[in-house]
Image (tube, rainbow, N blue to C red; front, top):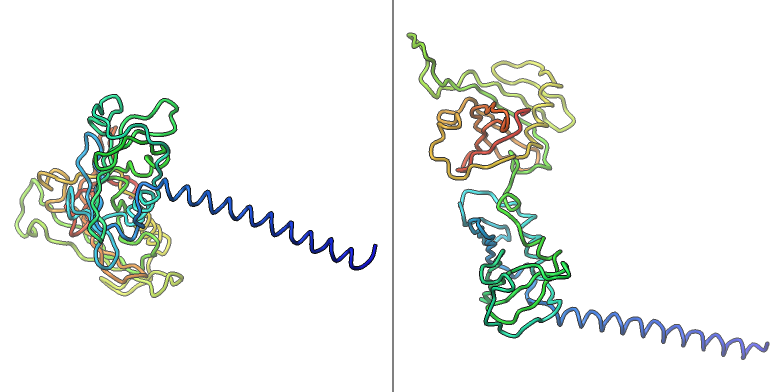
Length: 319
């Protein structure tokens, strides 16, 4: 075969490859355009300024995004610390929601679709002033999507995966850990028992709420050994202190009492003990008040309260 024939075939091959990849790119572009056309919303996650999740038979959970980009819970209690990653996840999935199929235009009777009493209502506002209300009803017969309605308009379908990501309870949306940053190791801990009184009153007893001697343990870095700095300078029992530090760093709240009638019901007025910690990331002091131990067979747990929060947290008794 002559060289020019070989070169001609090579050029033809290049042309066919370019045509093939061009068609593939065109299909991808067409599919992406079709997907964008089915998007329920035009905003991006960062545009969301307010977001409310209202699940049936539960109090609405509302949060706003502050100027520095973090979330702040407004309802049901402004002292609840948000789980920022979950709020960001909800915002992202909401912005990506797709209309799988339009069922009816402006339906008059919503009851057959479970939208007369929505199982979930997601509402919000963007930075440019756009407000929306997205209602979810029953799951449709194929079990792949749920009936939905945006701002009282058309009836359409949103897939169940998107609904699952949006259908978050307050437990999902709140910070459930004892410490602010669960990824940051602790560098300092203070511990003190608190006098709560006794049935037998004796002369010289401390006032109720008085702390005992404060024990302080520190380490300079995560790799350094723990040492006691108060009430005296001494090497610490590294294994015991490290075990407590790990328990506090990774502990997860099992249950939350958001509006306790009185902290005395949980052994927190006064508390039984105080633990103050400082982590390697922020260096901020975080105080935990340790309450009573619930030893009932079905609820065994320890009542704990984080400083500046109203909620009482039920922790695993192992803490």
